[in-house]
Length: 494
Image: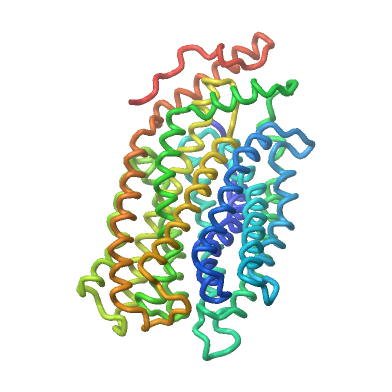
């Protein structure tokens, strides 16, 4: 197997995910309430804008992945994209949270669509090439999980840091009479600081991994472009059964994530009636939770295999997720004015985030392991395309989840300009009655498809050995690798 990846490389690689964590945290948790309850854009228009932006962004993912896999430059396949994306990503994120004043509903809608598309597109040009590098750093089954554990830890900590600052500092600036979550000036300050963090994290990651360029994979031999061949190669690569299992699982899980995260701040503000400072305290639970996942995911993957560990952790997280909301709905939970409410929610968030993050690390490592199986069958390495395919699924359907959440809010008659403690109990009960069954159905369906993933440690190591034998054989012949030369490849696990 390949040599151990230095700690510095793992850290520089992981730092790039801070930008993704900051972007994801902002768009998933606070953009809806900011544009609807603070700026006054109708919730259905916010949801529609996000859905349009995600679809446009999702289409770009496989395109960027394919281009990155085949790109040629003195800086390799990945790094030109990393450098080019940093400044546009930061500027577009700043303007997303600082829109011009006095825009009409239609003007604000189109502004939101344009800025979210731009933010997501610029992040894609960094994230897809950057995430693909994990499959190039090493072919070791366990070390890939460790590298992605660093990446997820830093993504979580980056996103959580700015979220805690937002809830505890930025949203409390300005008028003290304004509820923190409804403070426009605080969101504008947040957008400025977050944009700076995005720029710095991207540049540090690109510069820190620049020295690895000579050791990364080179693009395949250049051939004249032919549309039919390109489409055929793309179809052959994406027909991988294990990739289908990951994408099908992701289809349902990302809808659930988009659905739940966009409503999370509504639960906190109007169901638990928490202040922004309380949200900051609960958000702090993510720091130890991410570290627990950082330690737990590689160990579980090593002991039980990535697929089995991911299934077990996902089922546990899904089962625990809606418990506080259900108990509160049936008056079996502490009251909103209880001193125990925040500590209990902190403990619940710590457990749920640790489990969900560990599952995400394991699934990401499972995607990386598909690379060698596909290369053995097709003769092509498609790291960027595989990670882009998963990102495509996440963005396409998570936008659907967010849009569904806005439709649910409209269906239950959730009031515009609502204030904590003034939303009718019937409205909140109806929201619970829809939210919990839909969420559980989506997540359990996602886990079912995860069981269809076919690569184990043994089969993966067989693919690596077969590729190594084929490479050595072709080197001896003085020829390049051809998929047809890989004989006696291991059978897929059933």
